[in-house]
Image (cartoon, rainbow, N blue to C red; front, side, top):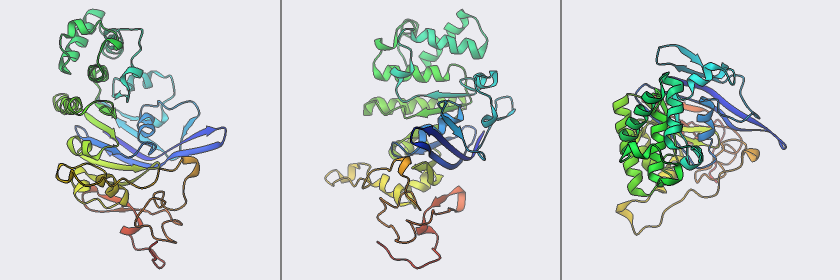
Length: 335
């Protein structure tokens, strides 16, 4: 359904041009879920906003970047070539690819009702009148589990709780019937109980509507529940990817291993959590060699800090970027 090849994104700033995303490639199959996981600053949200051409005016894509999407009618769309403010871009956003943003309170306009904003999207993409658009909006609110949808549709965002706003955001993203849904950390601001309900809801909607999904989060525990495949991002590059079960059971990259160790477990309630040491560097101060070497417990001196590791492929779509999984040409000396 979607292929992304050599995605690079750079920004023109007062400090010069910075490139927070470099050479990212992945694909999404129809009806499947791809999980993008990594700490804040890894480039997850920026990468997916590029799929909908939602980047700011000072951003530009790399010359060899190619984003190809196959629409519901079978037409091949080269997203990287679509002109800004064009009809093709308006049709793509919402109609073909929907997006759930991180904070629903910031995504909804506070001066219009939930129903008003949903009906605008429905009428734009489904070409129907106000009465039919309202009926569709009420149906979608009911489908995402909002009680009394016929009354809730006339409420403003501030009149709803956080969990209800998140459900309304999901209903808005799905109201135009997209074939691909991008969910940008949709459960981050919710408590554990509501988070579980939202994950169950999204799985059910995906199955009922037959759509594909890109699910962004920093929590591998959430990815284990919802994603078929996972791509682990660090400082703008994908360091490991593969089937979710394979990556979680047998993580190859030290960063993936660190993320898994940081997840609390009911079996080890009395043990201290083991966070990934250090902080993710700024894109303006990108380390030479492997971007993770400044925090890596298995860092190879003279190799990891000098040469960027190539992507090493494996069986069933597994791949990893790490010198530990490719013999370096020179001698090894662990630091």
